[in-house]
Image (cartoon, rainbow, N blue to C red; front, side, top):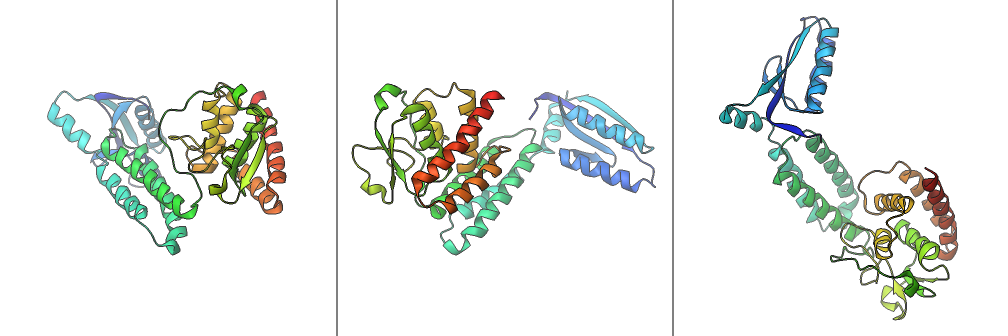
Amino acid sequence: MKPIEENRWAMLVISLPGRSATPRMRVWRALKALGTAVLRDGVYLLPDGESTRPALEAQAREVVGAGGTAHVLRVDGVDPEQTRRFRALFDRDGDYSRVTEAARRLRSLRDRRKLSASVRTLKRLRREYQAIRATDYFAGSAADQAAQMLTDAEASLNAQLFPGEPRMQTGRIERLAIKDYRHRTWATRARPWVDRLASAWLIKRFIDPPARILWLKDIKRCPGSALGFDFDGATFSHVGARVTFETLLASFGLEDDPALQRLGRLVHCLDVGGAPVPEAQGLAAILAGARARLTNDNRLLAEASRLFDHLYRSYQEE
C-alpha cells in the first residue's frame, strides 16, 4: 500500500442530480471499493496519500462528467480527538477477526471428508483477507494475526491432504561449496511433483551434473550415503518460507542468478502458493499431463528438465 500522510486527510464532497442513478451507483461502488468513510451524504473521507487522493480526484471527474459537482479537499488533523475519531472510521479489526476465527476452525479440522470443501473455504478467506488489507490504511496486529492464522490453517490442511510433504524447518541456511557435492547420490520421494522435479533439475544442471537420483517409495529406506531432498529429515528441504528449490539456491550460492530466482518464485507459487506467477497454471497443466503419461520417474524428470531448460533460457533472455 502506498504511504499515507500522518494526521492528514483527503475529503471528497459531491452532489449529483437526482436523475443520475447510474452514475451515482457507479461512483458509490468505486468509493466503497476504496474503503472510504462516509461522514454524511455526499461527503467521503480517506487518509491522504500518494494513491488515495488521485483516486478521489478520479471519482470527482466522474461526478462532474455526469453533470454533478465535486471537490477534493485536504484536511489537516489538528485536533487529536478528531484524528482519533477519523482513524476509528477505518478500523478493520472486526473484519480481520471474522477471517481469523474462520481460519482457526479450518486449522482444527480433522474430518478428511471435509478437506476439499475446506480448501475452497481457505481460498475464499484469503480473497477476503486481501480485500480487507487493500483498504486497511492503519494495519496493526489484527492484520498480522489473521495472516498467520491463514498460514497455519493452510499448513494444517496440506499436512492432511499431502501427508508426505515436508514440514517447514527453522534455522539458518549454511553456504556450501558445490565442489564438495559432486558425484553423489541424491534421494527424494517417488512420483515427484514440481518442487522435487525442479530441485532434481537444479541439482543435475548446476550442482552435481553426474548425480544419481533415487526415487524413494519409503523415505525410511533412504540410504545413509544419499543426500535427501524434499522430505522430513532430508539434508535439503523447506526452510522458513523457502521451498526445497529455494533452499538449494541459497545453500549453493545460486540466488544471484536472476533467472533462477524467477524460477524459484514459480516453483514456490506452484508448491505452496503465494504471489501469483503468470506462467504457473500453464506449467502445472503440462507437468500434470507428463506425470499422468509417464510412470517412470527418470523419464518424467527428463521431460520436466526440458521444460525447465526452456523456461530458464527464456528468463535469461528477458
